[in-house]
Image (cartoon, rainbow, N blue to C red; front, side):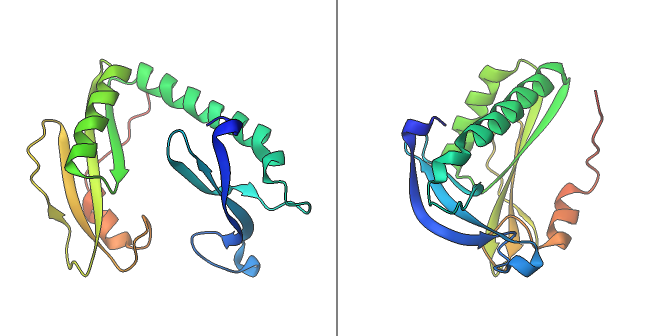
Length: 163
């Protein structure tokens, strides 16, 4: 995400788990889009008095690089990896598996959790992709958080081993 590819999509709004109040710990941020990779950031660029959102870019880029390098180091040193992604189509999952196969020669699995309004229980999607489990998860709003019962069901029995 290079600065020359980034553009302001939306002006300031409060953002902290969709709680629109500063009193609840929210903060006002800009919505910024990377036009090269089609990635949108909604919480990384704090509103600044003069409106120049890009003043926060060096700090953001440093944090991003640190996270990317940490991620790459973790998958390099892990024997078994579980990648979790919310909201992905069958085709996107096939592409994701292909890209991840290029990043690591280690054993990995992918868990896809597609949020579905009005669904009562977690349901398997049976995509028949080796190493992939795709689920539909009930949600009342199209966000990744908020239904702890569904996540408890999905992650039941999964353990993290530090290596």
